[in-house]
View 1 (cartoon, rainbow, N blue to C red):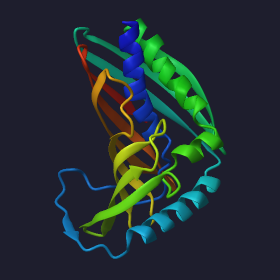
View 2: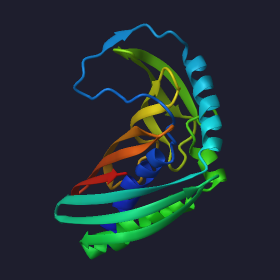
View 3: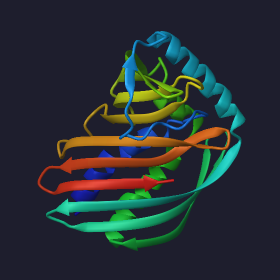
View 4: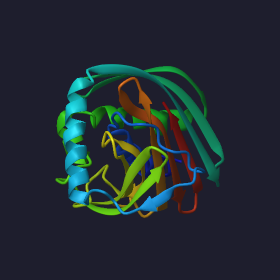
Length: 240
């Protein structure tokens, strides 16, 4: 069980933190997955999109002085061990990166709560300092970008870019991002860890969605699916 907890934490924790640390900013809502979209040639180049995204992110990061959110964590393990755990957490953010966590309620497997969920919160808190955030930010310093398409649905447009980390650093990921064409905020991220956490994890995928809250876009949900050798499969869902 100790081995299982460590491997699951590395797999789902690292990639979940990679998504959590990407601050989403003002933008109209992302179309639902079932909505029909038309793909057309992109009005801007990849370099132009990324430049504007970084500029706008910097402006809005400074404008967001603080907020409080209520999170729910749900983790399921299926395989040799069938366990689940839930936790409700209050998180308070203060500029430029301070986060305070208060556990409001918890249920399910005590082992999973203590060795996975609580350690996940501790790891996010440790990685939320400005120096750490700069090392995982979605910027040209950390990633290469390739524009693969432009989706237009009604009045909303989204640039779709492949992102590839320049180094296999902890908390970085490889995958795709959807950038709103008006505000140049990230509206969706799909990806996998830049580096497999260990031999135990054969596959990790995550999807992070963001929603508008006042003048800012903040995390709405984060789902990570991890396949672990021998032990089976885990699903972590975070709702904000």
